[in-house]
Length: 544
Image (cartoon, rainbow, N blue to C red):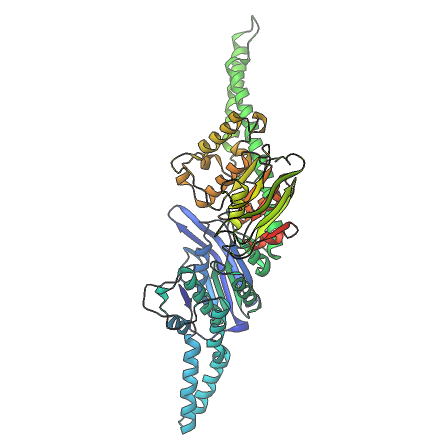
């Protein structure tokens, strides 16, 4: 949906303020006392895992959703772009454009009427004309249609204004929607996952427009490159020790540093409280043991002494029970932290050698490369150029029509595919344990090399005990990564490894890939990941 308020822009006087906003759904608190101020120069990003309330907060700021507590005040105009644009009606692209710039078109029409009235000398014509001119200038109304047209072209959106929206693909409608919003020039621009369905040129245009526009921007995104390029303030909706939202300044770098410091303090306090709880529990157990069997009075001790001693032991048990009951672990369990196991570097020499491999219809030309111990290779190219095909050939899952791939028998290869079929009816822990047991039984792994699922920091115990069909897409992707790492591979093949993963996990994975002893071959469209591995060797593929 695309919505925009039809009022005169406030420009430098514009302000959007949320104060102590809370949203509750049943027994779940989605947003807890969020306060945020958006100015004409703000560049704010909202991040968090799925279900954390990112889109909800955007709707609260837009005024399309009333908070259960707190207030939202706005001065100025606002444009909101949701993740989907409705195509249920008979609107055309041209009508969508007209709706987006309706106030500008109205202002030009009013100016034309005022000009005609001025020409015939109608009473108050001069005042009406002055007001209409002021409104048109404030909106820069003469250029509104051109702004949208430029955005349509830059985003590779449909420019035929007679096309019905319902006849366009989801991606095409998305680009039309975004172009309309970028051209509307409201005081505030609210974007929900705006990088979806955009190619590289479209991403560059959208990023530059958001960075340069004269108006505040709030964007919900998982795109780390957009965060790095645009965001100055980041609102993090992921869990915190006190269940309050965290707001970080200094852009993406400030967000990463802030999260890291927050996690360290969180883990320290959680460990302290757990240790104190364990100490109190042990003290209670000791007192109970002394009461039951710990005191054996010497022969001849009088009854009064025994009764006095027994009463003191009972009081000690009661006192320690009260201390334990009074001590609550108030800090929730910290978030998981990914731990890449120590992967071996493999035997000396070449681990993977590809000579002139060809796959008809799936790979342009022939491909040759070698990968040595601790090697790093990123495979790049446009969609359809054969990046996934190259990884499938290396993994031995696809035979080339020509050429040779050599991988020594003692080299273990782990392959993370873009999409993997998992047995949805089985429990995650069962699938992982079965794989490890099979690897040990076959001799591919020794007992000492086996890694437990909990050690990886990818799934909590309650998640790994679920059937795979009950897991979210992100949790399934974490399980897929765990299954690849279970074999302790010498060579990691990663095809779009950041798909469905949280920003925090992607950052942790990126750091781990830089440090591991294993060789890594990577294919990705993740712009920030490509920046992070820019020093790696590169295999560039062309379109077939």
